[in-house]
Picture 1 (cartoon, rainbow, N blue to C red):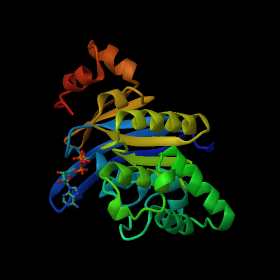
Picture 2: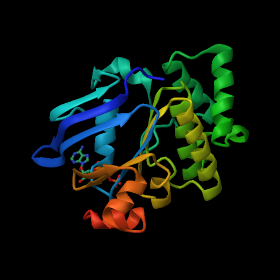
Picture 3: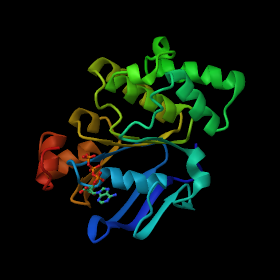
Length: 243
Ligand SMILES: Nc1ncnc2c1ncn2[C@@H]1O[C@H](COP(=O)(O)OP(=O)(O)OP(=O)(O)O)[C@@H](O)[C@H]1O
C-alpha cells in the first residue's frame, strides 16, 4: 500500500483547449485503496480529468500530484494502469501478442510475463481467446483485453475510463468482484462511469457537470444529503442531466 493517504490530488485544476474551458477549478483528493467514481454526462470532462491524472494531458492551471509527484511525469507510468476509453490495441496482432507487447513496456519478461498474461486473461475471461487476432474480437472483448493490459504490471493505481461499456452483466459482475479484491489488497481505483449501479459500488463519487465538480461524497451521503432515494436522483438534484 502507498505511504500517501491521498494518492492522487488535483488542486485548483483547470483545462482549456484553445479558448474552450473544459475543466474549471477542480480540487479533489483520492485516498489510498479506495474506489473513486467520476460520474457525469457525456462531454462533462471526465476523460479530460483522468487524462490529467495519468499525465496524458497537462493542466492549464493548477497542479495534479500522483503519490506526491507533480504530473505529468513519465516515470510515474509504472505506477498507473490506464485503460483509456478508446482501446489502444494492435488489431493485427493476437491478444497474447498485445499483452506481451504491453508487458515488455513495463519491463515484464520470460516466465513471469507468461504467468501474468494467463492471470489477467482469466480475470477478464479471455484465456480461451488469447491466440485470436484482435481484429476478430468483439467490442466487449477489446474492452476486456484493454482492462487486462492495464492490470498486467500490478500497478498500485488503476485509472479506468468507462471500463465496463459493452461488457455483459455477468462478466461485469465478475470484473467488479476482481476490482474490489484488488482494492482490498491496496490498489487505488479511479474510474468513470455512466452506469448508476456501478456508481453505487464506489466508495466515493465525484459528480461532474460542464467541467465543474458539483459534489464529492460516499453514495450513501450523497443520497441522504439530497434527501433523494438513489444516486440517479441525487445527481439530478445537483443539476446534472441523467447520465
Ligand atoms: N483535444 C480536445 N480539443 C478540444 N476539445 C476537447 C478535446 N478533448 C476534449 N474536448 C472537449 O472537452 C469536453 C469534455 O470532453 P471529455 O471527453 O473529457 O468528456 P467526458 O465527460 O469524458 O465525455 P464522455 O462521457 O462522452 O466520454 C467536450 O466538450 C469535448 O468536446
